[in-house]
Image (cartoon, rainbow, N blue to C red):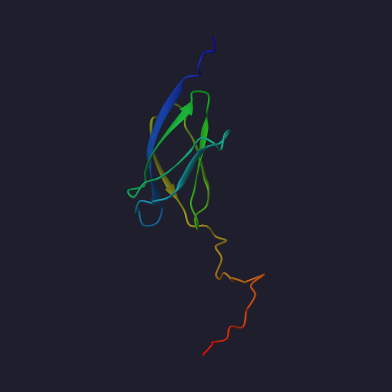
Length: 107
């Protein structure tokens, strides 16, 4: 009989460091297993079940620097993300492989 490893439930909230506003859609994942992941809700809140031997989680969101946070047995975390310094100013979209076809109207 195989024994399941114990899990701990971590809850928390993700905030913008400058404004203090919650960040919806932030990705929260276990550092040792990216398959253990969740996304913060509209209020920046998340819940994640981790193996009890997991020590850190990683929080990321577009335009913000990734944060690595030690769990250290805490069940409730308050995490603030700061804006990334290397944010892109522009994005160029190209249309490779698009073919134009001539269409004629029949009378």
